[in-house]
Length: 391
Ligand SMILES: Cc1ncc(COP(=O)(O)O)c(C=O)c1O
Image (cartoon, rainbow, N blue to C red):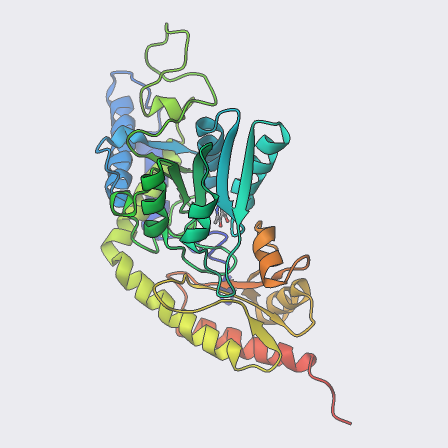
């Protein structure tokens, strides 16, 4: 696909670094066995790879627990958020979250409320796409167990004031969980400084890993329980699932090839420098946003290029349906975007774009100035289709 302009990096980063792809092939060529606790060399090597990735991510998120086994692996952010919500909440608990959440938070909350286990409240966001921490503070009650907040919106690209929310939660004694699916690898995340108790990450977006790998970083004193039980590879005679980390949050054979790729993705980010990647992406975001804002009939929602924004620009062309705009971008211009509700329907309700949604451009490290300038030109031409014809 030499001509494709890929601007769907919020869905998954593409392309991926070749070092990441090579590391996955190397795993299966050289030591692709079950890490388990067997003593033979290859099993030890596979186990060491997992340990190394736990340490890398533990340091990356600056977990104040200083126990790398509290970095646990699962499938993706959705899997980790399910574990957080179901593993922390007890019957009768109250949860506070926001209207910016992805369905990976909303649906577990709806489901648990439906089953009569919890109640929840969702805090709105302002016209610029930000949640006011005071609104969260006002909703915390005696029975509030958990506050769960999306760090960076996959629809609006706005970054929430996590440290301020963290301070409030710590003062009120409420567990604070953060969905860093869109921010990990884009913005430095410091669990200690931001007072994050537990976070959910996914490997295939800005961490530049493959799909199928994600997990949790569990801080000290987080009352999370196992929600699934099974093999751990150790202490097989014990009848109950192991309480100790990482087993508490993991079951079965690990996705070792995914972990190999994620480790290589992290190394690639670290070598390039997260700040350098961000500078590049935000400069492209500025060019794209300004270009789109200059087009008559195009509405851009909450985008910006400050330190409170991600390289995500969401817009619509006059009354054209987002799906149609995306289809023209794809078919006529070979530009890949994501249209619709982006699994975050309440974000679209908030900006008035539900139920049809909007067109999302999401920039990644491999995009160039030419890519975003071509996207602006394409949108300019598409918008002309919607201009009233002169007589
Ligand atoms: C903000 C946010 N949270 C959670 C997720 C879920 O990530 P995954 O599909 O990797 O589970 C996404 C994916 O788009 C997201 O954007």
